[in-house]
Amino acid sequence: MKVIIKKDYEELSLEAAIFVKQKILEKPNLVLGLATGSTPLGTYQKLIEMHQKEGLDFSGITTFNLDEYVGLAASHPQSYHYYMWENLFNHINTKKENVFIPKGAVKDLKEYCHFYENQIKKRGGIDLQILGIGRDGHIGFNEPGSAFNSRTRVISLDPVTVQDNSRFFNSISEVPRKALTMGLATIMEAREILFLANGEHKAEIVARALEGSITTKVPASILQKHPCVTVILDQEAAMQITI
Ligand code: PGA
Image 1 (cartoon, helix red, strand yellow):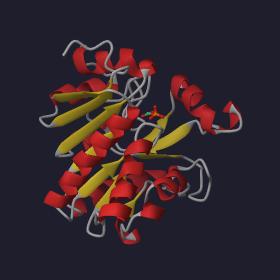
Image 2 (cartoon, rainbow, N blue to C red):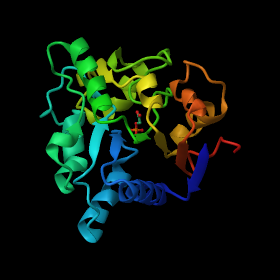
Image 3 (cartoon, protein in one colour):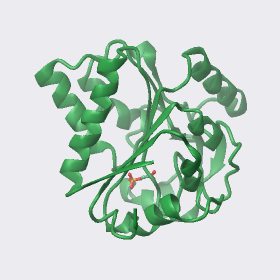
Image 4 (tube, rainbow, N blue to C red):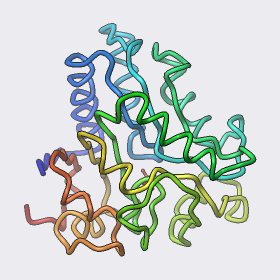
C-alpha cells in the first residue's frame, strides 16, 4: 500500500486527479470505477478542469459506479445518477453508452445485479477503482458484516450511513434504507485501487481500515490484501495512522 498525505482537501483532490489523468494517458480506454459522496467531488472538479483547460480526453474510457440507492429514479436529485451527471459527466466527454451506474429503480434487482457484474466482465474488468470510506468502514455500500466474497447485491444501510447521508436530504426519513452496491469481491477484482479520505471525522476509521485487523466489521480493511492500492489522505484523516 502506498500512502500519500497531502496538506488539505484541495491538494488531495489535485493529487488524485493527476493520478487518474496519468492512468487515462497510459490507457485511453481505461475502465474506471467511480465513487460518490463528498470525498471525490474535488477530484472530479479537477478532472473537469483538466478536460476544459488541457483537453484531457475521456472519450475512450468506460466507467462503473460503485452503488446507488434502491428506489430512487435516475432523475432524483439525491440519486447517484444525478450526482454523477451533475458533478462529472455533463462536463467531460465520456460517451453515454460507456457510463454504467447501478439502477436502483428496476423491478428485478437481483437480476439487475447479475447484469451489472456481467457488464464489468464484458468490459474487461475495472482497471482503477476510486474509493471513499464511510465512518463505519464501508466501501461502496458494503456495510459492516458484508462478506469478503460478496458481489453486486442489495444491502440494508447501516444506521450510521443513514445518519451521515441525511445531510443531503430534507429529512432523515427521506433517506432510502436500501442500496445496490458492488460487493467486496467485485471491488477487490479491480486491478488497482485509489483510496481517498479527508477530514478529522475519518481519522479513526482510516487507521482501523489501513492498520487494524482485517475483519468484516471494518469492510475497508480487506484492502490490506489488495496488491495495488494507493491511499491519498489529507493531514486530518491521516492523524491516527502510524505508517
Ligand atoms: P463521504 O462518504 O465521501 O461523503 O464522506 C464516503 C462514503 O460513504 O463512502
